[in-house]
Image 1 (tube, rainbow, N blue to C red):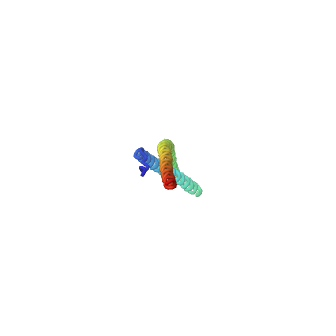
Image 2 (image 1 turned 180 degrees about the vertical axis):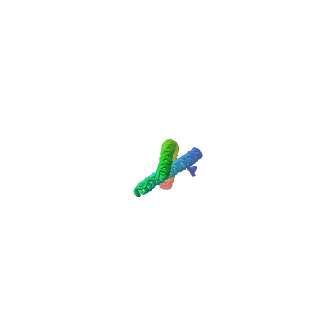
Image 3 (image 1 turned 120 degrees about the horizontal axis):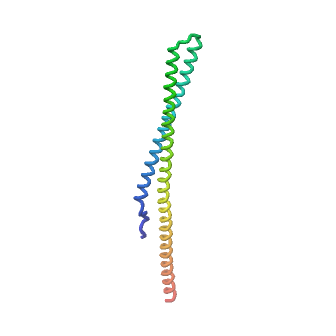
Length: 154
């Protein structure tokens, strides 16, 4: 009976798969952060549009209140600064995401290298096993043939 196939680098493959999974989690977390910041930007831009609408409505009455104009302007500046900060943060996150994706691609490549090696070793193992079985069957066939000749000549 032949030995069962055992990939000698199975532990290394397992560790590399764990690293790949960790890299996947990092990318997923970074994507979640990007989505949150993008949502923040969208929310701030919606607030800006609402504030501009309220500003126009207050001026549509024909009465101009300087204090109210100053408040609207101050709030719009605050919202614009929030958008700029969020966009800066979004750019940083996208740069980090790019690096995280590169790390994930490298981790995936490292796993794939070992998986291909395992496949090749398994194929070689199966060829050797088939070759041994064929030799065994040939030997049995020869023994049966020799016995039949011995019985026939006796």
